[in-house]
Length: 230
Image 1 (tube, one colour):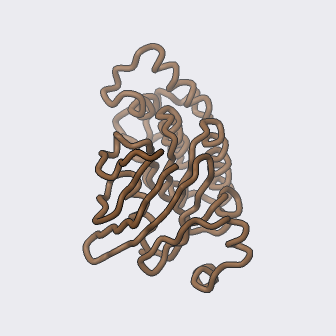
Image 2 (cartoon, helix red, strand yellow):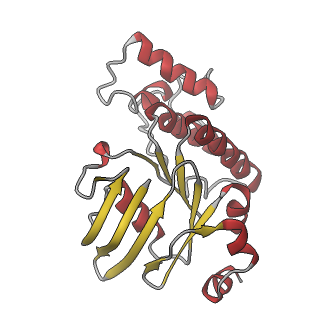
């Protein structure tokens, strides 16, 4: 379980309050207006933004001040963070060893992850030669090899068309289920919630509201969420 107690996140003049409990093995969607703090919340959970106040714990262990690499988290951003000068295999291999000195066993693990996301025959290619969907698959393979219990997605498929976006969401759901991870995904699209989310965290007005069941929330949204959804 991930617990953010009485959290306050400050970036410049922006302030976001959050008091959340994230249960294991569920898919969470984070939704709200642009500029509400959705990405800021994910960055705080991942350790890229410090808490001004409050406590973050994982399985009862305090990780408030832990560096990103020391947290049980892997994070996928909108730009996929692929290095253009490295091959697809090397980009995924960074998730296993940052120095890329992969053992035979580690290389086999990377190759298996590439096969799992449908890129088994593209290991030697550079990211620039891949389509947007293929780049997203490579980034997902890197998430897969890290095998962290918490997967944070910050709208990584926002630039993809609807059909490819749905395909990637289905792949994410399959990989998360396979690794028994917990997913927390920022999205602006209600259809993403209906497709993949068990729980929803609504962010608005400087507050991240506690998670609520997706089906219940979408069928009978509170006024603020109804106004956002239109």
